[in-house]
View 1: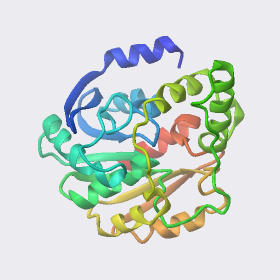
View 2 (view 1 turned 90 degrees about the horizontal axis):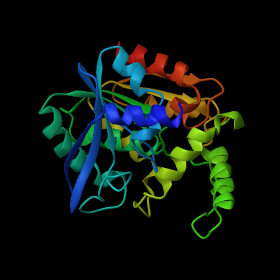
View 3 (view 1 turned 30 degrees about the vertical axis):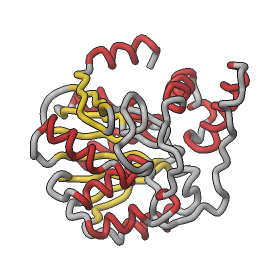
Length: 275
C-alpha cells in the first residue's frame, strides 16, 4: 500500500474511544456484519493489520482493530505493564462497542498472548480465537533475537538503518518485504510503545490460558518466524494442549509478521477458519 492508501483506509474507519487508565483506548472499525476483533503485536498498533483489513471487510465482516493499552494512540492501562493487564480494558471497551455479543478474535504475537488471556478470563466474550505468531508457549529461543537500540541516534538515516536491521532480525524473513511501508509503520509504532518490562512472552502464559479457554482455537505462524524457526512441530505440540485446539497453518516463506509479509496466504488461512 502506498501512503495515500493508508491514509484512505484510516479515513474510512470509525474511530472509537473507550476508557482506559487515565485516558482512552482507541479502536478503529470498518464494515458491517459479524465482528472480528484484531489485536496487534508488541511495539505495534492497528497498522500491523494493514494488508488484511480490506479483504476481511470484503467478505462481510465488521473489522474492529484495537490500539492496545500502552501502544499506538491508547493510554497505558490503570495497572500493570504486560499482557495480563489488558483483558479488563479490552472487555470494558468492547462492551461499549458491541454489547455482550461473543466475537471472533485474532491476535498477533503479543496480541495473541493477550487474546488467550482474554478468552480465559472472559469466556463468554470470545467465540473463536486465532493466535498468530504468538509467544508465551514455554518454548525458549535457542538463539534469542537481539534487537539494536535506536533512541540514542540523532541521525535519521542511522535510525532507519537500525529499524531495518530490527525488522530483518524479528519481523520479516524476506529482505524484499522490508519495504518503505513496513519501515514507515514500524517507525511510527515503536516510538509510541509505553509498555515497558514485558516478560510474559518468555513464559508459558499463553499455553496455560488456552488449556482453560472454552472457545475453539486455531493458529497461524510463518514458517520462518524468528521466534520458532525450525521448531514448528514443537509449537504445534504446545498448542495442541489447548482445551479445544482445531488446527494450525504454517505459511511458507513468511517470518513473524506473517500477515504483512504473505497477506494473500494469511488472509486465505484466516478466512478458512472464519468461514
